[in-house]
Length: 262
Length: 262
Image (cartoon, rainbow over all chains, first blue to last red; front, side):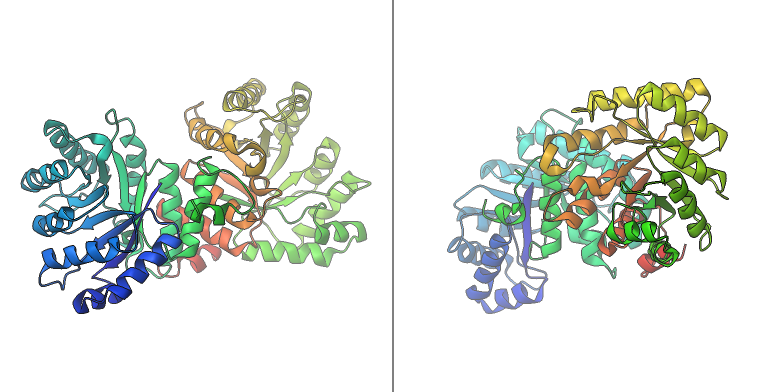
């Protein structure tokens, strides 16, 4: 599974302060820590306080590329911020994200095609986050259809089902898990699936426990990628063990350590 | 989900010594600890060193019933040991277990009918543990057919898929998880499913982590019952959280504590 590290996000204190002060050392430490913990992709988000997201994103990409060759996931609602990052990116990237709104798809899908990137598509639109599985599937189908129309390869599309927190929408989570499994029969090749994991436990007391339990459930239902905190050791250990049980990691006594050296 | 506590088993040091010395206090402490941790059913197994399993089982049932009204699961390969226990049991019990062998089914199904108990059916026979999902499903079908023929209610039947350890049969576990989900469409009413959880991590270093990860995966695939160590707090917390996510426990900040007071 693709592990996308979430910590370089201006919303969080450490990265937020570093972006404002243009302090590379903090960002580069966050890169190293997340990579050592086993993450495959680094999410870069300038955060809500950025006055110049395009400049900040370019600075983030530059700073991060000085210390890693890992794939980057450019995370912004502003197409120009994402494009400034893409202009200087060395490896394949992922755009995070488009919604199912036509005007968003008409900007982000061509951008992803131009720079040959992956693309995360959120199953929500101007009306908000859907309240049931059918509407989630409908919005996903709209994103998929638009990508097919524009010639965007579905194997580079990641559908994000937008999980709501347990304490907000407890009755919806089983549906969302079922939807993950259904995606695999949705079209061929099937789009990949991704979750922004931390949202599931927003505002709850047992955040780490809820995060890792939901992640394991999503993995057994075929989840392809997750945006998460790779420094949460118990979360990463759960992820690695779930992959071990599904025969995606080779067993050895020290399988947890072996994963991080992959 | 039905949590069956595994600790009153002569195979383990504490219970083994207590059964030999007929020391009630140890057994009754194991009852209290498991019930406080949230278990619904107590498995009682005299262990391999018992010289007189029938007498030992009756003593176990008596000792346990002095301190709890929880359901008991009588665990022995010897029908006479199970029957001695059933003769004095107050509440509904479960027989653990029959195999798919005709001569076993011809003894244990009538015994379960006579005492109106539940029955665990292991998907194995004289040839041993099956090596793939098809054979597991075939053995399960043999047990189900035999129960139907003898008029045993399928809602009281628990199919145990006999999970092998990750380090022995890593490639089989995903199949076993899929089989769990398939059971729900196997017959109507579908038989329940149960796993002897600890086996999945036999001989491994990260036992508790592997146990709880597999349990969560099994729960999302519809598992109805598990024989496990309820004193493994992280395991129980994972189980409760999985049920919370599937909307089977009501959310509150202290949902972990609330479960144990149910």
